[in-house]
Length: 151
Image 1 (tube, rainbow, N blue to C red):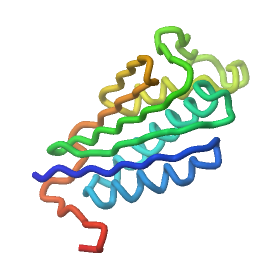
Image 2 (cartoon, helix red, strand yellow):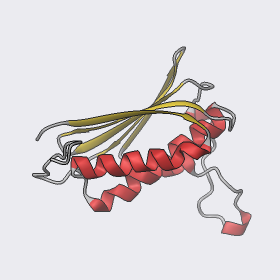
Image 3 (spheres, rainbow, N blue to C red):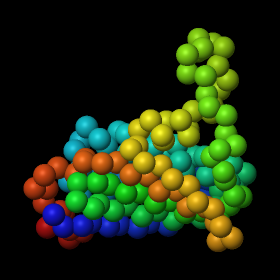
Image 4 (tube, helix red, strand yellow):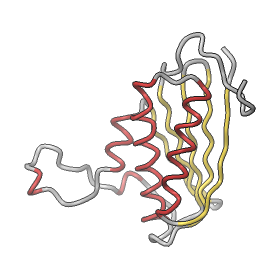
């Protein structure tokens, strides 16, 4: 099976989220991802990017670099930002059993990423934060990779 990769770089706040979602949708189409897995990939990326915009950049937004790639039947999404360092161990786990009216608004982004993806790893260094999310076995067997010129 051939590998596939696409990259995008965007700058801004929440207004760039539709562009990021469109990028993921197109990459899924081009790489032959099982339609049943697209929702998980899209929601995980949307949550990750929303968190970066809100927390790493203080809601003002900033530069986000994303790489979408396939290796065999796996999808690997790498997101890099230059915002404040983020350590996921400092985030409290949400109470997912309390009645909805007793839960605080927000706070589920990290939880959703871990639930929707098979692997989620964070690293931070002087050049920014890097998030890598992997979903195993979602590229359809024998999928023909599309090319940007329609082929």
